[in-house]
Amino acid sequence: MYRVPDQSGTFAVVTGANSGTGKEATRRLAAAGAHVVMAVRTPAKGEAARAEILQRHPGAKLEIRRVDLADLASVEEFADGLLATGTPLDLLVNNAGVMAPPTRMTTADGFELQFGSNFLGPFALTLRLLPALLAARAPRVTTMSSGAANFGRISFDDLQWEHRKYSSTRTYAQSKLADLMMTRQLAAVAAERGWSLLSDAAHPGYTRTNLQTTGPTLGRDKPSRTQRFLAAVDVLPSQAVEQGTEPLLYAATSPDATAGGYYGPTKRLGLVGPSGPARITRRALDTDANAQLWQAAERLTGVALPAPAAAR
Image (tube, rainbow, N blue to C red; front, side, top):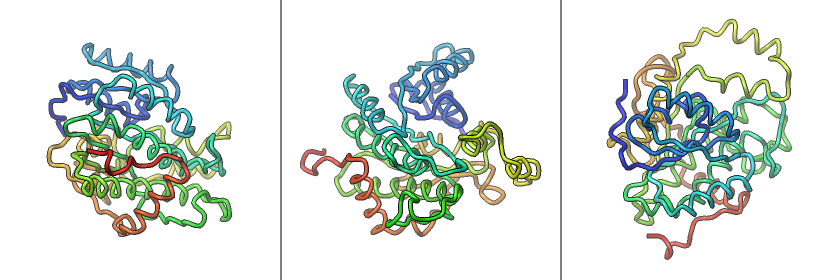
């Protein structure tokens, strides 16, 4: 099991911290001494998760702050509140996401839900928190991607799936490929500007969390017959959340993690097992496409990098 290094003095933000890999990452970061901001959409669920963690680790330093990554105004409000504290941000873990809603849904800003929640929201959050990140000695941004990124395609002429027949799985794959491309582009920007910021990514393999059930049932009272059948015959190797969170924790805390690196399980189709380097799909190695996607995200969110002269 991966042992999180001492995190005393670390100030961290984890999105989606009330359940699944986000809650487990929060627990283990806090257990190692970090002060963790649990960035959650529903504060009551965040408080319940906080209480659960405190039962196991009474000395954990945890606070709840609300953010809805499907609402850019909420992202701005969250970031402004954090920046107002004046505290340097050592670690941002972009973990929250939604998976495979059955029909095309949209965010508060009119973006396709998965592209908006899984990519544009974390993109805007990362850029808005850059002043706090760059004030830290060795800041890190770790973003959760997915093995589905290997099957993703970025259609720049239809990023919101407005003109194609909606596919819940292909749209999810696009959003997770976009996360990996963002990670690589942020690493490139940091290197170009001489920032000490490290940007890397992880994927959890096939980890049993509520991600597989909450997304596909959005807008429905119960799972479809197809979803119930697939759940019943699922024979793929899977792992518990404690193991599945380890690639994210490795990427977020290991001194051996590298800029632009990608980490995931290393056994049985990359679905389970100890953490290690994961193969990066060639589509995320396309530097021109990465830069093009970044520019599109700046345009869509209205959030952009600071001028080079203003960055340190």
